[in-house]
Amino acid sequence: MGAVFCRTVGWVLVSCGLMSLLEYHIHKHLMHRRKLPEWFYHHIPELARVFEDHHLLHHHKYYRIFDYEPDLVGRYLNISLNPWLGVFYGSFVWIPLFFFSSPGSLIFVFTIIAHHLLWSALHQEMHVPSRSFLSHLSLYQYLARYHWMHHAYPGANYNIVFPLMDFFLKTHRCPSQDDKRAMRLVGL
Ligand SMILES: [Zn+2]
Ligand SMILES: [Zn+2]
Image 1 (tube, rainbow, N blue to C red):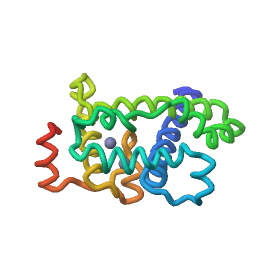
Image 2 (cartoon, rainbow, N blue to C red):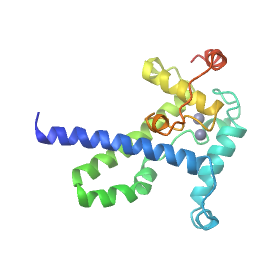
Image 3 (cartoon, rainbow, N blue to C red):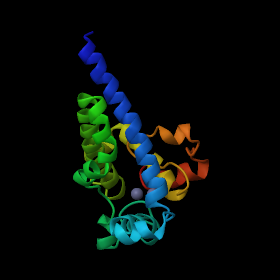
């Protein structure tokens, strides 16, 4: 195998691991908590909106049942991520990385975009099922059950696309028999 191929695969794996770490911490600390100094929320209103839209609205006002939210506004609120915003916020990683490895930096940018598109497609299918081809994949069903557990226990299962850091940081939670019964009621 060529050295370029091995390096590319290496950077893809590193980027996915890094994305899992970012997905975990952003979801846990920015989407579910409001613990930064008030200065940040005042000067970057997007930060306050991320917490309100996700923790207060997506988790606690809407989606009390996992899918088919009856409120038309709540049904699509916080369901998808903007990949370009992800590239913008991810610049604190990929700009310094560029000076170390330009191919590594480029692969990380592609990983951010792919992650955000996948996050949006998976999250939408989980909460607004269209029974697309995605829903028949066993990997999708695993991730949907994983996210069901996060809605039932918001202190667990923070990863959505790359469920890796929950295992490392011991926030992964397995479903009980009651959880499995409840999941079956929504077709999971
Ligand atoms: Zn959700
Ligand atoms: Zn959440």
